[in-house]
Image (cartoon, rainbow, N blue to C red; front, side, top):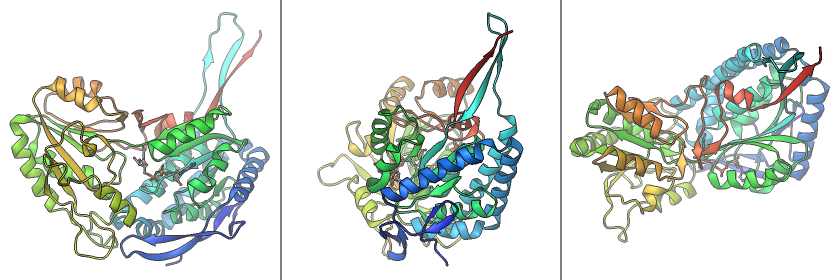
Length: 476
Ligand code: NAD
């Protein structure tokens, strides 16, 4: 397999200005796949100023129809290279190939959705008191920095790049240090599809080393960030100096609420993958399971049975459901959450141990006995660990759900429509799914309440977030 290993600036691949590189390690084999150029501050300068030149020189003045045509072409070229992109995604982070294929397909659809959105995105005419003619325009911002994490590298990059380009901006995309391969290839393929040079620059490298240079750059008008709450908070502070626009998609600790009248078999059989998919490295992982006491024992039994059936293994095999964690270091972090002799009230019903195979694997763990003060119950683990707890009263359960500083996602299982509506309104989260675990639809807004973020990805809400709203008044 050929790995992209250079930065992508002004329509061509190039090395880092100081010749620095970072290794990309396959977590399934722990072998180095390739050394990739790591951008420096000088490369940030080149990428941002090149993007600004393209913004002013051409892209912002493309007619909507011409912009849409380019974006449809990008979707087509991504589809032609879908298998290659899926393989790159799978080997860099140990993602099961079947998941990678679905995510790359979603990335192509995201370009199509926003290509189509360009002609359906308009302002208003407003009947102001003075008469005359008042109307609004949605104008592009300029150069946007898109900073993305390693857990869903390709789709999250497209969730930011596609609406930003569709709205007429240019983009500097910074993938995570661990997972730059699919982003670098996206830059090359978009250029091949006809995107003008400089519209999409891709800078691989470490966020700690060049992230601040990107966020602080005076020509960056908006930072669209997905990642941890700690880094999001830092970016918000840095951005505040110049009142830069920010959108932040951050961490989560989402609930999965099972009422006694739920379809218990369905809830229990689908719930393991609502937390263990992507090896639990999912901001939406339903890692706190709340079960009404009268069905608690039965649910736990079914949940553990279903967890034991999850197929863990080689990410390259189509039947694999769970691959390794992204790195040996990430596995060690996850293990610090697991019960020890110092937490005797916590009980591991299955998993939590390392399978006897090479690679950064961890068997999915089901833990019971959690108290509100336990770290495993309160903090984002970002690994294959589910905590299950019984509740007696709806009010008490809701208080515990909403006590989390996070508010990203969640599921709710009941056959009572009134209760579904009542509880859905009360749960403090940006998205919620009832009687299923699907909460990400590219046509609908996605994002968090509280410390899970600010602003929205996906849907038309994302496109609005890449524009400034201008009001123009013409006197009679
Ligand atoms: P991270 O915050 O460590 O890194 C995210 C990105 O920020 C990476 O590209 C990194 O290089 C960059 N970065 C790091 N320091 C920076 C700095 N000072 N300036 C600029 N950029 C910097 O997160 P991660 O470990 O890659 O991803 C895991 C986290 O992402 C989890 O908390 C998860 O919940 C969250 N996440 C949220 C969503 C969502 O939509 N809400 C989706 C996926 C992941």
